[in-house]
Image (spheres, rainbow, N blue to C red):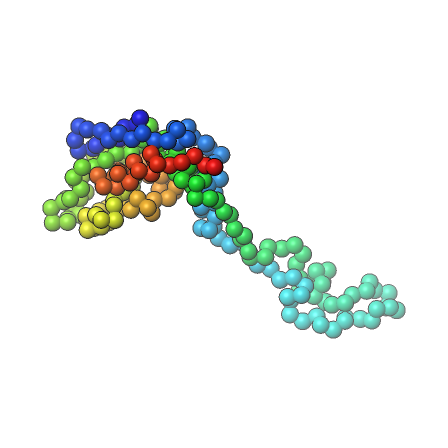
Length: 207
């Protein structure tokens, strides 16, 4: 059993996560993180091979009698301006992981973050007049930066928090591993923490 404290009242929210989430598998987390960020990396360069370089269709000299090595085209990699051997093709390929691998890695990170006292709950998220100035007062004493997690049904309450530089508003479904790694605190609303509880308690072991 693990507990998440509230930031604006003396209470805790209890979660009983699956056994497979209580201990971090660092190799799994590293693998999942690498694969999820693969698409964000820049594509490698693209070169032309001898068949792609323009020109060189005519045989540069006859096969025999010149004293030179035989050659079929001036676009051979042996000539200046020719194709390149074994250069980058511009294709990144794919890196795939299963949903269960991603779920287990995310679950372990959440549990570790809770144990490290870096996940909290805010009871009252509404601010008067949806003013950014008022919203800033709610988290001014927190350790920054922060991910503020909403449920999709609370989209209207997210508005005043969008312009605060140290807060990254997000829906529970859209949080990725980069948010968990890079932010000092993750703060859930009452509705979004129910989704976190469901995710951690119903998560099954990878088969």
